[in-house]
Image (tube, rainbow, N blue to C red; front, side, top):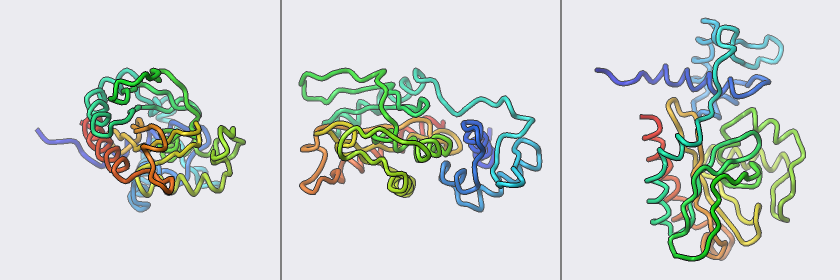
Amino acid sequence: MTGTIQSIERAAAVLRVLSSGTRGLTLLEVSAALGLAKGTAHGILRTLVEVGFVGQDSTTGRYDVGVRLASLGGSRMDASTVRSLALNWADTLASRAGESVRLGVLRGLQVEVVHHVFRPDDSEQDMHTGLLLPVHASAMGKVLLAHDPAAQATVLAGHQELRTHRTVIDPGAMARHLEAVRRDGTATEVEELVIGQAAVAAPVRGRGGIVLAAVEVSGGVERICDARGQVLTRFVTQVREVARTMSREFAA
């Protein structure tokens, strides 16, 4: 029996991304959301337009789900499903990092923590499962925002809450930061949400490359960052590697 067909998986991912928004997306937004080359994304969109699954606005050039698929479901995955698939790898990451690990999914303009592994040092800690974090001020939120064009457009167009003196709320600075997240494959947050806390997160992808969740290592700045306030390379590497492994399982 043959394996899956990559072009069909990518087309399905494009449809899910388009169905997650209400305003239509540009070619560049679709390309960035899925990590596809511009030419590849354009070829998929052109084909979907031809078969009626995607429509293109003749004035703005934006793409949206076509009339034949107007009722197509969104790209969100059930939180319990995400958690069950991530249990073992989240525990492994917490053990390697020696820090707290959280898994989150996008809920509007917030991140819902669907799984939380305590820092493995027997210290007293609060459970974060079910907690809602602001998408613009958390590492997981930035990862999810960078790969969701509709949510990103809403955040960049509106006024975001200043959670600490380090929270990035300037739309231009945020746009540049999200571009770096897409390029580097990870997002960091240092005292933007809570003073004294820092985190690094990476995307967990499903079939076709669509981002379903984000996994994060978080802890005290004195442990997560170096003397310059930059997240230590070992944490970036650890979270990136586990996210890639989780993505392979999610896509299986």
